[in-house]
Amino acid sequence: MNPDTAHSSALRPGPAQHTAPARHFTILLSATPRGARLARRLAAEELHRWGWPYDTEANRTATLLVAELAANAVRHGRVRGRDFRLRLTLRPGGPALRIEVTDPSPDRVPPAPGAVPPPSPDLESGRGLLLVEALSTHWGTADDDPYTKTVWCEVALS
Image 1 (cartoon, rainbow, N blue to C red):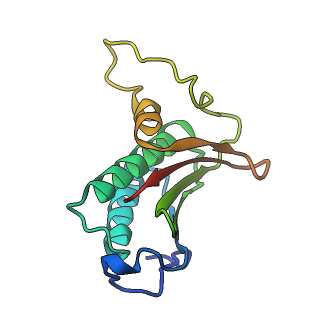
Image 2 (tube, rainbow, N blue to C red):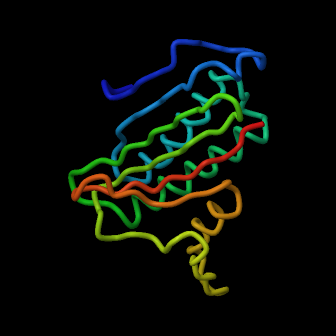
């Protein structure tokens, strides 16, 4: 792990602890295919720690969403020498997971939710945001500063 990694204090909570305070995980990863793969693996591990084991539908869905957003950050938001950031926030009471992927390319903004065009049937790519739209409760983009953009989504884990 790098110094930008933040873990929750609970190591392996049981299902009864899903209403605990919000939990956060943040890490900077290289904007490479290897970094995108690592984002998915680290998200699966963190969800496992938080009480959603690897073999649950919630873990599989959330890690698929992380994989799609991380792959888009690497493919469409990459700036040479700059990393992307993965942030997971588990909100109690739902529980709902917010997934945020921040990249250094604020000028390359994806289509708005509901406006993602269908991919050409003869192309092998172009379906990532359609998956995000279908599997998340809602998603969007944020441009909190002029140097980055964040694509986020939320998914119910119950």
